[in-house]
Every structure is written in structure tokens, then in C-alpha cells.
Image (cartoon, rainbow, N blue to C red; front, side, top):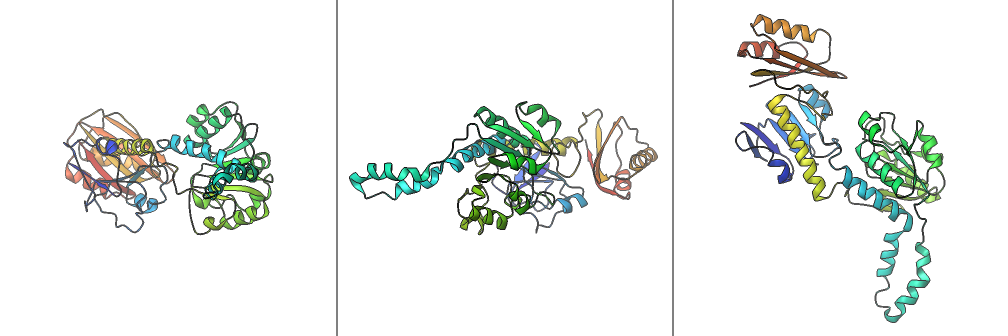
Amino acid sequence: MFKIRTLNEISPFGLEKFDKANYEISSDFENPDAIILRSFKMHDMELPTSLKAVARAGAGVNNIPIDKCSEKGIVVFNTPGANANAVKELALAALLFSSRNIFGGVEWAKSLDGKGDEIPGLTEKGKSSFAGPEIKGKTLGVIGLGAIGVMVANSAYHLGMDVVGYDPYISIDAAWSISRHVEKVTDLNELVAKCDYISLHVPLNDATRGMIGADLIANMKPGMRVLNFSRGELVDDSAMRAALDEGKVACYVTDFPNKEVLTMKNTVVVPHLGASTPESEDNCAVMAAKQLKDYLENGNVKNSVNFPECVMPRSAKNRIVIAHKNVQNMISTFTTELAAANINIENLLNKSKKDLAITLIDTDNDIPAAAVATLEATENVLHVTVLK
């Protein structure tokens, strides 16, 4: 019986994927086999020795201690693409309300309350203060062409925009999905120099933190509109404040409130609504649950942020799952140790990702506890699981 601990409210559509015959689900388990969560911050948590996997029902994993999990051989999953349509729709809405000053106009209209019969006339006089450009015929730059970025780029093209995309790490799937009408560039400065809008869709890491800073802003077209539905820290708040004050940036839309952006002029601050749709929460929970199940039952890894994709159909009675460091001679060590225990290997798959690797070994032999202990004691082995 596998124990799944929830650290947030998780959609029942996801939790029902864990059949009651093999899984228990609770928010109180002290020694779970796996954790499923959304935005709960795990960095101060003590990770139990029982923990084999963590699944984030969403794309961002900044709330999970990836390095600590990797050291213990804990596979961390996310759900890229499951909330893509929800974020895409909000980004498209932002294209419109960043241009037309819709929110400013709405708030001003509310201020006319009590003016009685004067309201129609005052409306006609005041509406020019909220005029803004149409998006048709303008150029949108999409930074990051993953699941969300591709959808934003394709949709913007169909709305009549010219679209320029930037992503030095574009995946094969994304390359197949993106419209042939989207121009690709290899230099961010080239992108911002030709675009009227930019929309950010990249993960937060050391390379992207503060990427929208003073140097890049200096190369932007005057009157740029910047949309950030990815992570707040991608934008240097001080540089953005200066750009808004100077008029270099006409409007900044961010889905990440903080004390700085709330006081910036010409800024629309959205309360982190990017994936806040029932459909998105259901999709993310279902995807996270399925990935956890496949790992706990079969050792298969898909959409992990720390370990490699490693998927092999079951071909024998037992499977050994070994999470280990990506160093030389590990496979030969495993096969030698198993041969010494009279275990015949029916099938084997090894995959690596940077410093980490996963090895799946299928056998029809029973696997004695002593053989498992030998594997666990092997240098550079992080975690061993036997699945029957």
C-alpha cells in the first residue's frame, strides 16, 4: 500500500487516479512514499527516508528543494503544459487590457456615480483619456517557446499580430507545434528592438533571474508593453520602475504582486491568476497523479525536473529501480553485483541527465534483501526500490 501525502488542496479528479486498493491519501502522513502539492513551500521540511517522489501539480518548482531531493534520490515531477491554455488565455487578455487601458477606464466610470443625468456627457468628454492602440498589425515578442509560449505565439498570430519568438532551448515538440509564421531570433536585443509587446514564458533560474533589466530595456522600442505571467523575479523591479517613469515602457502587466510593483505607475498587477481555472487545476492534478503512479508502480520517469526521462515497459516479474549519480562504470557494477546474487537480467535501461541517472532492471528472479542492501551500499547510489 502506497502512502500519498497532500500538502495543498488537490483536485479530486487527480486524487481519484490513486485506486483505493493500492493507495492511501492523507495530509497527515509522516512517512509517505510520495508527496503531491501545488504552491506549498517545502524548503524547511525534513524529507522522510520513505519519500521516493514529489509531484508539483503545476509547472513551477521554486517551492521544492530540488537539490536536497536530488541528494536523496527523490524524483521531482512537474506538469508542463497542463495549465498552458489557462495561462495563454490570460496573456491574450493582457495584450488587450495593456493596450486599451480598460481597467483605468472602468475605474474612472465608477467615479461618475452620483452624477445623474450628466453621466453620458461626462463619459463622452472623458473617454479620450483611456484611448489605446489596437494589437492588430503590431509585433509581439514571445520569450520562451515552451507549451505556453507556443500557444501564445500561435494565438497572437491568428489575432493579426506579427510574432517573433526567442528560445535557445526549444524542444522538438515545441518546434513542431509553433506556427511557421512565427519569426525566430537568436538574440534578445534583436527581439526587443523590433517588438511592441513582449510576453515572458521562461522558467526562473540563475540564467533568467532579472533578465528584463536595464541593459535589455535600453534596447526596447519606446512605448513597449511587457507581460509577465511566468515568474516575478524575471524582471528587475528597479529597472522596470525607471522605465515606466521615463515612458520607455508604456505598461507592465505582472501576475506576481509584491511591495515594489504595487507602487509602480502604469502597472496592472494580477493576483497570480495564470493557472487559476478549474480546468487547469484538474488537468495539473491528473497529470501529477498519473506520473506519480507510473513511477511508484513501474519506476518510469517522465516530466522530472531533476532526473532523466526513463520509460521501459515491464518485461519480467520484478523490477529494480536505481537512482544514482551519473558516473562511469555504474552499469557494470550493478550487473556484477546482481550476477553474484544469481540474478539474471531480462531487460535493462539506463538514462542520465547532467549529474543524475536512473537505471531500470527487469528480472524474473526473486531479489533477496542482501542483494538490495549491496546495491544500496554501492558508492554513488542514491536510492534503490524493488517493484513486484
